[in-house]
Image 1 (cartoon, rainbow over the protein chains, first blue to last red):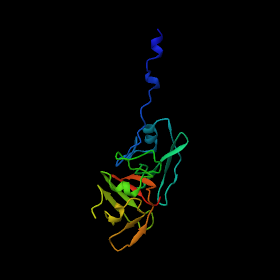
Image 2: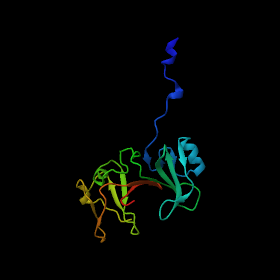
Image 3: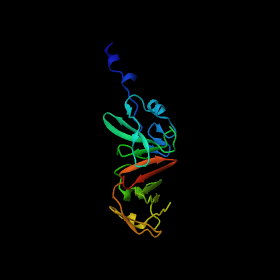
Image 4: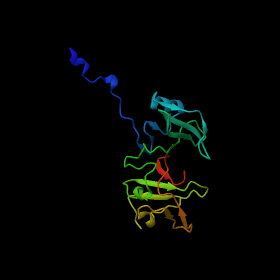
Length: 134
Length: 48
C-alpha cells in the first residue's frame, strides 16, 4: 500500500532542457518561427520579452528563464519570422561543446565548422573547420 | 567573406588572428563571447 508513494510519478519527471545550438536554432527555438510560435515551442518556463533593439542592426526578443537571459531572438529580414539567435549564456553549446566562453583555441579543433566575426564595421570572418590547416 | 584557417590560432591562449587578405593582424579576445545561429550557420562573435 505504501509502495505507491515510492514509485516515480510522470508528473514529477521533467524532460531535460534542450541547450544545444544548431544551424537550425537554439534548443527548442527554431529559425523561422514567429514570436508567438516561439513561446509555444519553449513552454511556460520561458519568458519572451517585448521587441527591442538587441544589436546595432536588428530588433528582437530577449528570452529569459528563472530570471536569467537564455538567448536573444532577432528578425533580420524585415519579417516577423525569427532569423537569428544570439547566445551569450554559456549553458548553451553546440553538440561539440562550443559555446560562449569557449576559447578560440578550443574552437579550432572541434569537429564542425565554426566561423568567428570581429563584430565591427569591417565584418571580417575567420572560419574554423576541423582544426587548422596552416 | 574573408576567411582563413589561421595558423596563429593553433596556439593555446592566443589572442590574435592573422588575416591573409591584406587586413593585417587583429587583436581578439581569447574566449568567444557569443554564439549565433543564423541562416544555416553557427558562428562565434569575437567582440559581442
